[in-house]
Length: 232
Image (cartoon, rainbow, N blue to C red):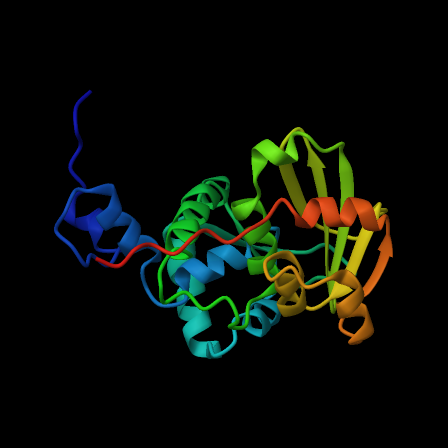
């Protein structure tokens, strides 16, 4: 196979930080600017409107979000489309290649969670919470459980997860579920990773739970944060 050089004309549309053929260097050019990778994370479960993205990314300005969306579109990681009537709203969604970034994001997240500086008590978005479930699940233990459907409602955002054969498929939707958590992402993280009892969260008014409690506990037991890396 002959290696083809990118011409100056081709490169003119893409900012270059590094004069380096390594794929890691190119990945940094594609999603290494502040907020870019988190925008990809927020789109991992389906299209979002501009306002929805901004609400999920606390601290990002409208101007910076616009710039990052334009850059990710130029890089063919996401695309814009207009929803059909009656919504007729513009949304941003990942391309097929953009969705393929899930595995690298999960690997990077699991690696970073071992840092002594990782603070699991900081705020997190609904999409971040859902992606963490796909990242941190013990697949071997999950295969021993019968299939189950779980619902998650974080304010106006709803997700349905299907656990089967050691895999957890998650989509943005409302649907029938054997267990359902209505809470916020921070409380959900406390339940899943901090092992806060469901009943304690209910008593505090932070959770509305319906469904099979034994199944919910079995699901929660599939998750744990990794041990911290040793500092030498």
